[in-house]
Image (cartoon, rainbow, N blue to C red; front, side):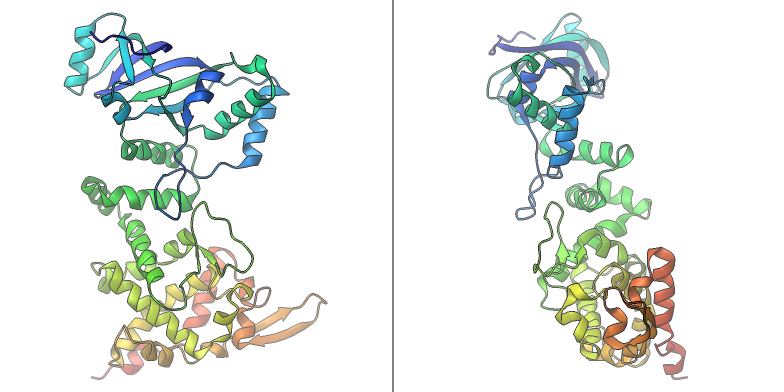
Length: 398
């Protein structure tokens, strides 16, 4: 490449250019990987980063596998050298031969296969975007035994992706193959779509844009004073006693699909939909306040309640409209939902006694509403709620 080496550390292997992106498939010893690795953990306070926090049990399991079970690591860690490090020449790429073919592929977004190496400085960061628990297991062993330093670690190294591209690679790998937990995957998808018009168009064409719209609505709903303020659990944030959290953010976002599929809300901005939702739930709170006062003791603001009540919202909206009400006023929803406390059903307590529960008791954890589990159960619960609603036809003036 015509550049002078600036480093003492080298990794050699199969070098390629794949659609203009330089990649190196190689092995590095465990100590080199450990000394230079970084993981971009998602921070719920700042919104920066994109990976889940490491799970200690999984790190320990990996360490035991490589140590006690003498396990091997055939699958590579997926690693990136970020564009800023390439631009600041902390890395030199040395091509063994066919320099012209290599350089042409880089310039023309083409393909090329050969061999070579990278040479890099001590301060270089190798950003792991898949395999952080395996890497964590290696770190643990390196802290316990010196003879593990030369363990060969397979790495698949991309050279020059920026953090946004790196995040997208992480998303694709973990949703198409290993399935990263939904709470973080959906949040990443929303974050990527904000800055990628092509991704937004693709999601719309595949009828998946409701996911990013749902997250935008949740973000707006969190800003409003109302029943849902402080109720959503963020990715990488553990639930603690007394924190007021009742539902993971993606579960609530998923429950919004029937709402966002309504013709009225297909093109509505997130802030408008959030105002409607806030008014709807505030109306419910007015007719039945108890479940909102000690929300963790009731399922109303957990998965079962959110899914069922959002499934009936399209009918509620039609009744509000036919009554001449405004969709942003809680009183209009309180009027439509006034019979919600009349829901009742049988429940068995810990002593085995059967009783009829209604009103707020219907929604207590372990009571009637808790029995409507799974999608089929929540569908039945929504039908039960609908039976207490007036029909839009009853209010139509001909």
